[in-house]
Structure formats: C-alpha cells, structure tokens
Length: 177
Image 1: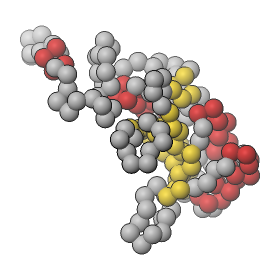
Image 2 (image 1 turned 180 degrees about the vertical axis):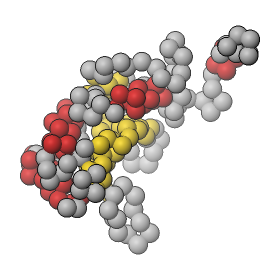
Image 3 (image 1 turned 135 degrees about the vertical axis):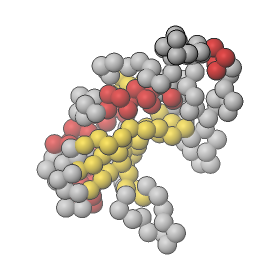
Image 4 (image 1 turned 90 degrees about the vertical axis):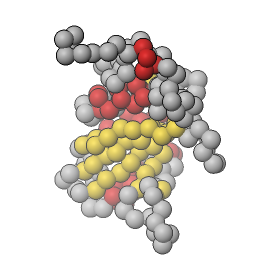
C-alpha cells in the first residue's frame, strides 16, 4: 500500500476535516514526490493519531520524530508555530507527516504520548526549545536547558548571541564534576 491509500482512508474516516495532502518539499520539476503532509487541528490530533496507528490501511506504528518550525516573519505564514509529527509505517513501508499549527501567547497541543510512547522525549525537546506545551504529557520539563531558564532558544525572536546566559552557567572542572 502507498501513502496515498492511508490518506484516502483518513479522508474517508474524517470527511469533514478536509485532509488534503501537500508535498513536504516541492521538487524542481514541480512534482510532489512521495513525502506528503496533512494539516491537523489540535483538537483532532489524538483521534487522527489513533486512527493512523490502528487502521490496517495506515498502520503508522512508529512516531519517528516530533519537531517544530517557527514561522515568525515567514512569507504568507498564517500561524506562528508548526509542530510536525513524522509517522512511519514499517509494515506498509510508507511515511506521512502531520502538521499542527499553534500561536502565541499560549501555544499548546495534546500530547501524543498515549498513542506513541516514543513522543515523551521529543515533545520535551520541542517544549524546551520552542515553548510549545503538550497537554497531558507525563513529564513535561526541560530536557536541554536548565529548569530555571526562562526562554526558548530556537524561537526566531531569541537573539542569535543569547541573552548572556552563558555567563550564568556553572563552570565544571574535573575536581567539581
């Protein structure tokens, strides 16, 4: 089965949601290739995720990655952040990307941890670097930055040279480690 079969199953199961596949990256010849994404509203993410995992036409057993894009100052962008879920069907050998768009002042989406337990660390990373909150995550805390760090370094409004935080990190030596 091809990813187009999975998208057709998704469109059949959720006809009112208007899932129209988009090419993840447009090719020079104008073709879409085989890497496609669909936009999912945050309120529908868990139902769509469960369907894509459990329906045998889709069988997306693996969540390969969760990442985020900050679309600040991006031409024609309607939303600030795009949370991207990279789904893989090992048994059917196809891949699909889900994009969930959220905005300031409180960007949040439901955690997909109940569906794919591998999301625990990748959601924490997106929270730490972009400030996206994942509702009902089992352990949403910083993973790369110190717990008391106030900002999110991969947001495009964060200064390239930081805000002086490097001077505040404790210096570790062989004797103190």
